[in-house]
Amino acid sequence: MSPQNSVSEQRLVSFFFSSDAWGGVPFSESQKQKVMVDAMLSGKLARIDDDVANLPSAPADVRVRSFVALFEVDGSVRPPTMRAGYELELLVPYTRDVLNVELLNGETGVVNLVRVDPEGTP
Image (cartoon, rainbow, N blue to C red; front, side, top):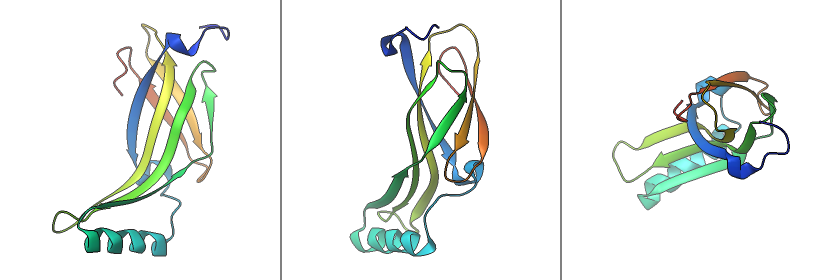
């Protein structure tokens, strides 16, 4: 895909990665404890999230639409369930080839390779 191609010629793919894959989440223990207490008291889902600085390294025609660190607790179930990690949305070109996208987590410095198959399924 050449640089002049438009975003309309790209497709959106979404991923969730556990915090272990990216070197942890950028929230303090007190922030996580507050989310836990809020979820338990409300009996609902409580969440903190933060946009992550990132630099896609390759290929150049892949764009990061969203890269968010999150910590959430579902207080509607007992025991409450927790989820910590990263939600990633990429705009990738339509192609018949597998794409290997290298990404740098600007918060932790961890580099990961994300494989996107031609149908968009990781």
